[in-house]
Image 1 (cartoon, rainbow, N blue to C red):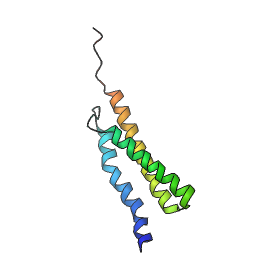
Image 2: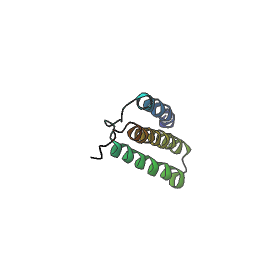
Image 3: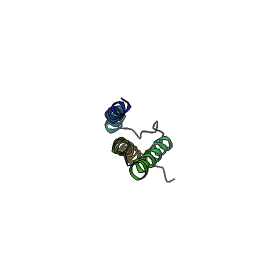
Image 4: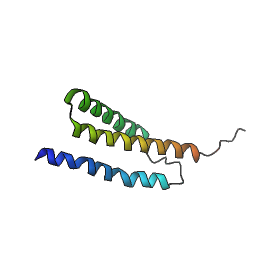
Length: 94
């Protein structure tokens, strides 16, 4: 039973990242309200969990769910960094 429930986590995780990713993609601001340290911590924990699932547990389901996490968290970090650079206010050199 728990294996079946865990299998659905990958789908739920993927769906849960979509609203944030779409909002960032459509944004025309610097996305300063996104906390990058939090997203970097989530990415770190997802990478550690992915490696643990692959090398220690040899668990495909756990590894797949964490691979999806790593992909989407990295995507959100990338969009945020891109938008901050693209829409950054030019500084006055004087």
